[in-house]
Length: 307
Image (cartoon, rainbow, N blue to C red):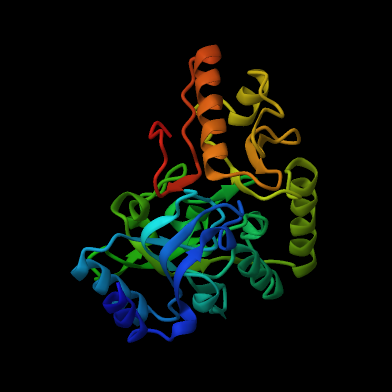
């Protein structure tokens, strides 16, 4: 393990090469045990080199952004987590095009677009994730989706090869894309927006912020929507109709404000969240014959793999 650590230190400095790093510090759930290694690269070259070391040594690795859609096991992750976040968050505006690195937050991108009087991205301002994750899962809200604004994406294959994909090559659907399906790493993306009125865009963003604040339990740690929307249904309504509003396992709870959210009331464990979500799946299937598929990613060892 010391040899592996030295290999990572040859790629990036020790302040960005963390060992036994508690993942509760890096997820919006505020849950998760330690990762063997957490690397925070600041360039495409560093990402390539880190992936190459892992591949050569057959060490498991995982790419994450700001941890807004992630539940890490209480036992942590036995491998290497490569975090593309603040160290890879450069944003450039050129006319109606915005180019940004994968670690840029959607909130920061939305603000940049507004400041440049570019419309079409306000929908993403309240999504608590990074550009990389948003591209991979075709994130969306309030009638807008990433596929509506993407022009091109620079990705890295799991082997380490970097290539550029145009929008029509991304095969984007509901919470799906070729990026997610093939396990590509998003490094950078270009967005094509439209000229607009800055004050109108600002008002739209404020309106959407107010809607989110009034309808979502933003005062508690969570990973956003816990389940994907089943075709023809809304997950939150199914959960409410199943009588599970406020249902708790330990400090994990189905939000009373929005049943589509699972919240951490303070000291929830990953096991609590997993048990709660399994119970929700079971009850919704029993009462309505609808399968709920988690939108949250599970990382590490969980005793029941049905999730």
